[in-house]
Image (cartoon, rainbow, N blue to C red):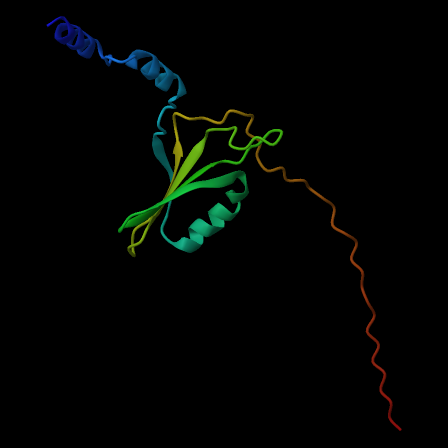
Length: 144
Protein backbone atom coordinates (compact mmCIF):
# COMPACT_ATOMS: atom_id res chain seq x y z
CA UNK A 1 0.00 0.00 0.00
CA UNK A 2 2.80 2.40 0.92
CA UNK A 3 4.67 1.69 -2.32
CA UNK A 4 1.62 2.40 -4.40
CA UNK A 5 1.14 5.79 -2.71
CA UNK A 6 4.82 6.64 -3.13
CA UNK A 7 4.71 5.73 -6.82
CA UNK A 8 1.57 7.78 -7.29
CA UNK A 9 3.18 10.80 -5.57
CA UNK A 10 6.31 10.52 -7.71
CA UNK A 11 4.27 10.11 -10.88
CA UNK A 12 2.36 13.31 -10.10
CA UNK A 13 5.61 15.12 -9.38
CA UNK A 14 6.95 14.03 -12.77
CA UNK A 15 9.59 11.66 -11.43
CA UNK A 16 10.11 7.98 -11.97
CA UNK A 17 10.59 5.54 -9.16
CA UNK A 18 14.18 4.62 -9.95
CA UNK A 19 16.31 7.73 -9.82
CA UNK A 20 14.68 9.29 -12.85
CA UNK A 21 15.08 12.81 -11.50
CA UNK A 22 18.86 12.90 -11.98
CA UNK A 23 18.61 11.50 -15.49
CA UNK A 24 15.88 13.99 -16.37
CA UNK A 25 17.94 16.90 -15.03
CA UNK A 26 20.96 15.73 -17.01
CA UNK A 27 18.86 15.42 -20.16
CA UNK A 28 17.55 18.95 -19.73
CA UNK A 29 21.08 20.31 -19.46
CA UNK A 30 22.24 18.50 -22.60
CA UNK A 31 19.11 19.14 -24.65
CA UNK A 32 19.32 21.95 -27.14
CA UNK A 33 16.35 23.92 -28.24
CA UNK A 34 14.89 22.75 -31.52
CA UNK A 35 15.45 25.21 -34.33
CA UNK A 36 12.48 27.19 -35.59
CA UNK A 37 12.77 28.24 -39.22
CA UNK A 38 11.52 31.33 -41.00
CA UNK A 39 11.59 31.58 -44.80
CA UNK A 40 14.21 34.01 -46.06
CA UNK A 41 14.02 33.57 -49.84
CA UNK A 42 11.92 31.70 -52.34
CA UNK A 43 13.03 30.82 -55.85
CA UNK A 44 10.83 29.99 -58.81
CA UNK A 45 13.42 27.92 -60.65
CA UNK A 46 16.56 25.91 -59.94
CA UNK A 47 18.86 28.26 -61.88
CA UNK A 48 17.96 31.26 -59.70
CA UNK A 49 18.51 29.18 -56.57
CA UNK A 50 21.87 27.89 -57.82
CA UNK A 51 23.11 31.42 -58.56
CA UNK A 52 22.13 32.53 -55.05
CA UNK A 53 23.48 29.40 -53.30
CA UNK A 54 26.85 29.36 -55.13
CA UNK A 55 27.83 32.59 -53.36
CA UNK A 56 26.93 31.22 -49.92
CA UNK A 57 27.62 27.48 -50.01
CA UNK A 58 31.24 27.78 -48.84
CA UNK A 59 30.04 29.04 -45.42
CA UNK A 60 27.89 25.98 -44.69
CA UNK A 61 28.31 22.21 -44.27
CA UNK A 62 25.60 19.68 -44.97
CA UNK A 63 24.17 18.24 -41.78
CA UNK A 64 21.42 15.93 -43.01
CA UNK A 65 19.08 15.36 -45.91
CA UNK A 66 15.53 14.11 -45.43
CA UNK A 67 13.55 12.81 -48.37
CA UNK A 68 9.78 12.72 -48.60
CA UNK A 69 7.53 11.89 -51.56
CA UNK A 70 6.77 15.56 -52.25
CA UNK A 71 10.01 17.32 -51.18
CA UNK A 72 13.64 17.05 -50.11
CA UNK A 73 14.72 18.97 -47.00
CA UNK A 74 18.42 19.74 -46.63
CA UNK A 75 19.70 20.99 -43.29
CA UNK A 76 23.01 22.87 -43.34
CA UNK A 77 25.09 24.06 -40.39
CA UNK A 78 27.55 26.90 -40.17
CA UNK A 79 31.04 25.74 -41.19
CA UNK A 80 32.85 28.03 -38.76
CA UNK A 81 35.65 26.07 -37.06
CA UNK A 82 38.27 26.97 -34.52
CA UNK A 83 41.41 24.97 -33.77
CA UNK A 84 40.19 21.81 -35.42
CA UNK A 85 36.78 21.77 -33.72
CA UNK A 86 33.99 21.56 -36.27
CA UNK A 87 30.40 22.64 -35.83
CA UNK A 88 31.30 25.17 -33.16
CA UNK A 89 28.48 27.41 -34.32
CA UNK A 90 24.99 26.02 -33.98
CA UNK A 91 23.33 28.23 -36.58
CA UNK A 92 21.53 26.27 -39.28
CA UNK A 93 19.50 26.75 -42.42
CA UNK A 94 16.94 24.59 -44.18
CA UNK A 95 16.58 24.33 -47.94
CA UNK A 96 13.30 22.79 -49.07
CA UNK A 97 13.32 21.51 -52.65
CA UNK A 98 9.94 20.26 -53.85
CA UNK A 99 9.95 17.36 -56.26
CA UNK A 100 6.86 18.54 -58.14
CA UNK A 101 7.02 21.10 -60.92
CA UNK A 102 5.76 24.62 -60.37
CA UNK A 103 6.51 24.77 -56.63
CA UNK A 104 9.09 27.26 -55.31
CA UNK A 105 12.36 26.34 -53.61
CA UNK A 106 12.50 27.80 -50.09
CA UNK A 107 15.55 28.83 -48.10
CA UNK A 108 14.85 29.28 -44.38
CA UNK A 109 17.07 30.23 -41.43
CA UNK A 110 16.74 29.39 -37.76
CA UNK A 111 15.49 32.33 -35.74
CA UNK A 112 16.22 30.97 -32.27
CA UNK A 113 19.73 29.52 -32.86
CA UNK A 114 22.01 32.42 -33.84
CA UNK A 115 25.66 32.37 -34.86
CA UNK A 116 28.10 31.96 -31.94
CA UNK A 117 30.85 33.96 -33.60
CA UNK A 118 31.31 37.27 -35.37
CA UNK A 119 29.77 36.98 -38.81
CA UNK A 120 31.98 38.44 -41.49
CA UNK A 121 30.79 38.95 -45.01
CA UNK A 122 32.78 38.59 -48.17
CA UNK A 123 35.36 41.30 -48.65
CA UNK A 124 35.48 42.96 -52.02
CA UNK A 125 38.64 44.85 -52.87
CA UNK A 126 38.87 47.41 -55.60
CA UNK A 127 41.93 46.74 -57.68
CA UNK A 128 43.52 48.62 -60.53
CA UNK A 129 43.40 46.72 -63.78
CA UNK A 130 46.57 45.27 -65.13
CA UNK A 131 48.15 47.28 -67.95
CA UNK A 132 47.02 45.99 -71.25
CA UNK A 133 49.65 44.44 -73.40
CA UNK A 134 49.05 44.98 -77.07
CA UNK A 135 50.60 43.13 -79.91
CA UNK A 136 51.36 44.35 -83.37
CA UNK A 137 50.11 42.09 -86.09
CA UNK A 138 52.35 42.11 -89.14
CA UNK A 139 51.16 40.48 -92.30
CA UNK A 140 53.88 39.48 -94.66
CA UNK A 141 52.88 38.60 -98.16
CA UNK A 142 55.49 36.77 -100.10
CA UNK A 143 54.72 37.13 -103.77
CA UNK A 144 57.35 35.70 -105.97
